[in-house]
Image 1: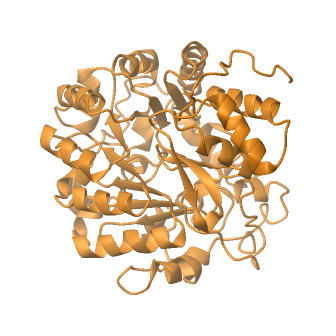
Image 2 (image 1 turned 120 degrees about the vertical axis):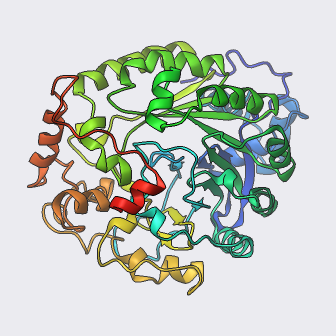
Length: 93
Length: 391
């Protein structure tokens, strides 16, 4: 699907919903998302995106930071897609 | 209170392939701390062992703190405080604070009895992440009947208290033939209480539930109707309240991947410190369950005979041994295999390939009896007295 930022406000400051906690797990060498009686192990890019969804950063700033981090200039579509996915999963407000 | 289904819904991308014995087992992810078998409720569907009253020994605070530290060091990230009723331990706040402090996501699994304003505030201060509250039905009459207590109104108050204190709330209701027709009302009740998650946990037949299996077993029509109702609500509710509903395995053609595989993610510690590869492992004969007093958790998890007994697939018999689905369901549940076939290494008879599958079919057929049947033994409630008598 390529419905990029449908319904996503570029100026929103995404943050995790109350019941989720993002945590770096050394033994798994990955970020995990913890929630009541469950856990999702995140791949590196998903982890880096969610780690920035702390309610202080605008989506635009998150994309800038990630493009710096990965040395890329075209991550916006991927980030939008993931944010949409995370909202559908109920992780983000 | 406790339900077997409340194990973690693991979704681990690229989890370790456990199907060859040479691979080192993955770490435990979910520590279930059964702090006590004492419980103010007497639920007829409880999975706790029926002989729980014969040994009332409980680990002390120091021993629990040590268990929690060891499990975290091994990589466990979720901890459930359960029982029995964990609020009967007055060191619960201490244990939660320690677990949260070293990075566990902390879950309290409770009947609500004893969750006063003071204790809920203390638990909040300790950093408790979430509370799972059990209900037995949407009606006072049935809630109080199957738990053999008067707790319905108390649970309503506790649900409000949980929301007031800003906790995510999971409402858990164990389903059986008496309350399956109430599924819509149970969902409405959860919505009214602003539950974030509703676990409709069909009874699993271990411990007390196994004793009462004939009474509790639903009909397939009841299940189908309940499932259709759940699906209608799911469509309407989206993320507002997530509903978990799993068809009980007696009504399936293939077994569930019990515990995600033996010794794969789940580590249970019983009140006396016995380490359990699954909730019902005590029912298996000849399995010498290790004790946290005698060995480190790492040794118990990686080295003990009990935790290795059903890892991988070399223990399997036919039809599992050559089945191309053995990596999916790991042969199903070992305890169910033993309870129904007398052989813990047999295929879970839930599987239609099992030579003992007719035993499941017979039980399911029996559920088709008339609503009132004098020949069925009355419910036996989980109580100390009953445990000492029959356990």
